[in-house]
Image (cartoon, rainbow, N blue to C red):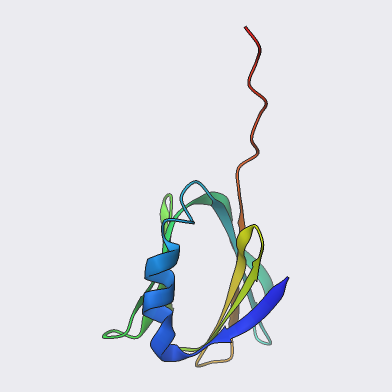
Length: 113
């Protein structure tokens, strides 16, 4: 595992390029803050994309049945290893940490005919 902080100017191109790698993955969103404690916002839904829009300053997690918006993100960290992107942590202006954990679907062995 290698956790890296992305510079703000790299957010949009990084996640635009990453979109092909995210196909077929599922995601869970955990929200951590001093006020709220630890809460699961979404649990292992199909992930359609991670997008940063610099004009509106919104980081968006697009999932089946859920558009999770993070306004005014301050820091973004990615956890990447040989298998690809494992998680993304976004810290917003209120110091709320939103952790998007990713996993690939299990590949079932093909039956022999």
